[in-house]
Each structure stands twice: as structure tokens, then as C-alpha cells.
Amino acid sequence: MAAPNENRTTWATVGENMSDRARTATQTVEAGVRPDQVFALLSDPTRLPAWAPAFADRVERSPDGSWRVTRDTQQFELRVVARPDARTVDYLRTLGPGR
Image (cartoon, rainbow, N blue to C red; front, side, top):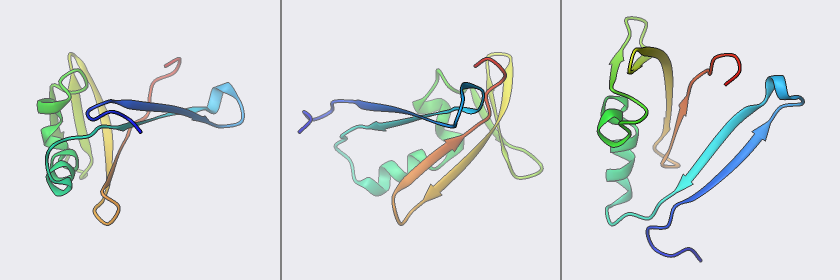
């Protein structure tokens, strides 16, 4: 059993060859707040800069309904899939070639 507040990260790859592999990161962290509070924070993309400043400086809703993230001078589209029944939040983005 992991110690309280210990971060555990699992990396997995999918795909048949290196050119189509995707990287998935799953993190588990214990926190002293209710699960619904954590879910509310993580499922709101506009709050990313507050808890993940290395990932996002600003997050805005695009006219087409997607999320536009700005980090330094780079922008990228982010898709957020939140499942309240499972209390899971997935952040999906496409990385550029070679990344």
C-alpha cells in the first residue's frame, strides 16, 4: 500500500510501431478533500493554470467549443473528457512530430 500523499505514475504505450505510439500518463495522489471537490477542479479546464502552471498559462473556449491552451508562445487544442460517474478526467491533445 502506498504511503499517504505519495505520487504513483504509470506510463503505458499503445500502437504497433514507434510512429503511431501514444503516451498515457496516469497519476494517483491522495488528498485531504472530498472526491467531488477534486473532480470539480480537474474537470474545469479554465482552472488548469492555477494547478498546472507548467502546462498552461491560459485556457480559453474557442468559438467551435473546443479548448485553446496557451503556454509561453505556443497554443494547442485540448479536449477534456470528464466522467462524473467514474470521477475520471482525461486531457487529450495531439503532440507535434517528433514529440
